[in-house]
Amino acid sequence: MPGEPGAERRAPVLPIDSDEGLAAAVDALRRGEVIAFPTDTLYGVGGNALDATAARRTYEAKGRPPGKGFPVLLAERNCGAMGDEESALGDVLALEAASGE
Image 1 (cartoon, one colour):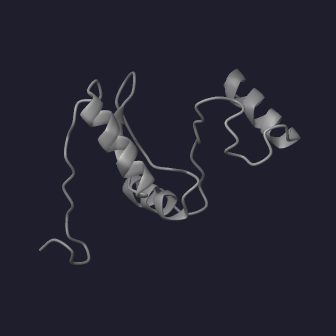
Image 2: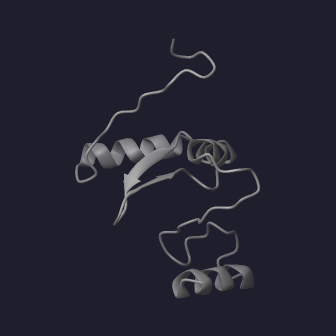
Image 3: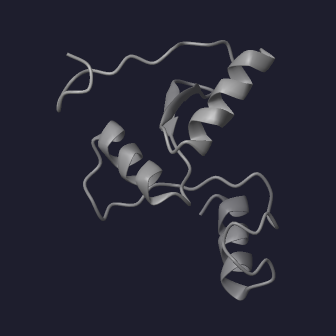
């Protein structure tokens, strides 16, 4: 029965090339939900890495053990997600991500 612990949740499947699909994905991310999305080879599972609830849900959905990190993808280098846009840490992270290391 929905809402019970362990109950299976079903999510809608929407095309990513539609305004409706994109808006639904953005809304889900803002609510702290996890989404699945196509990549160049398979599908990815993710959520808003800056939202503790979404990060926990992403770990659970992926079956990833706590403490084992996962990549965080940013739309642009200076998006401010890491705090001070000009911080040395942000520069290092951006350079490592750009170089693929």
